[in-house]
Amino acid sequence: MKPLRLLQTAILVAVGMLCLAITARGQKPDPAAIETVRSWNDAVSTIELEDQNFRELLDSYKRNPPGRVLLTPDVRAAQRRRRLRLIAEIIDSHEKRIRAMRRLAKAEETSQ
Image (tube, rainbow, N blue to C red; front, side, top):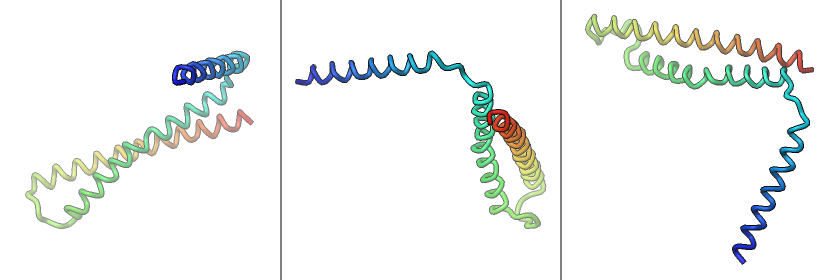
């Protein structure tokens, strides 16, 4: 009984793949749809790194708020440089996402 079920499953998968291949072969990819997907992926790809940078910056401010002098001057200077670098990275990822979202809007306009 088990080999018969395996054979039936294999036949169903093969027929499904054949139907999919026949359907997909006749269609040409829409350039606007490709640009829409690419722009969306570019925009979304910045979120995780930006979130990590925001969390690290927040943790830094929680541990040592501005104006609180608990660290030695050299450690405070290193912390200030690190915070400025995190802020610059967050701004950069925002700008990348804005550019990608503008491309996405343009692709959506052309696809309609």
